[in-house]
Amino acid sequence: AQKITQTQPGMFVQEKEAVTLDCTYDTSDPSYGLFWYKQPSSGEMIFLIYQGSYDQQNATEGRYSLNFQKARKSANLVISASQLGDSAMYFCAMREGGNTPLVFGKGTRLSVIA
Amino acid sequence: DGGITQSPKYLFRKEGQNVTLSCEQNLNHDAMYWYRQDPGQGLRLIYYSQIVNDFQKGDIAEGYSVSREKKESFPLTVTSAQKNPTAFYLCASRNTGPNRELFFGEGSRLTVL
Image (cartoon, rainbow over all chains, first blue to last red; front, side):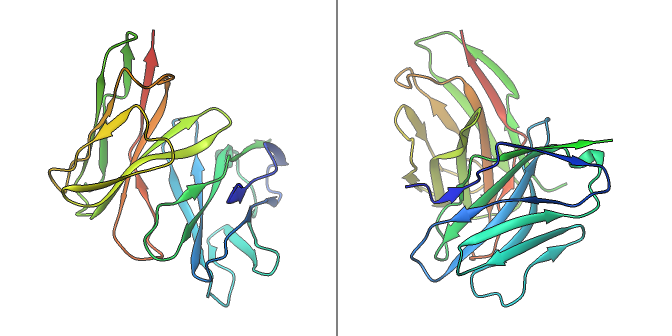
């Protein structure tokens, strides 16, 4: 079974609008962490934001916020005020327990339109 | 500057040849990882190492081998036994701790002719 599911292969958003990228996860471990990465066309992976399973508040980093709904096992990334430079692949990932490797979803390709 | 260096960036190989991808980090990270990326597949874990002289298989280790003789280095060998080696390979590292993110290299694109 997939541990990380990203159901949107591709998304379009108008410049300056907000966009939500979906991520659901599957784990029975009470301790886990959720990560979002951005991959531009150049290929490097850029860390965006982290949410721990015990964190009481949703994580925010600048224009990025994580809509964490623990009961639904979802960790959606919200990008506010989209910019052309936000066009990229976005990956959701999870780490179970303290030190296991990250497991990645298949990604969502975001295209920002001027 | 601290970071992860992967080389070569692009590599072409004939079928039946082994090839080694280099990964060096100067971040003093304990753990290092190799992921493979295919179109539409996301990143899949090949091997990882949490300490020098120790490594574990990931989900798709068949046809690959690694070594971790130094903390800074984690080379990946793609052997002739790997049936479909054409892919984008990403090396990563991190400090231990549950909320520590992975830092990635720029990747190596391997094409088998």
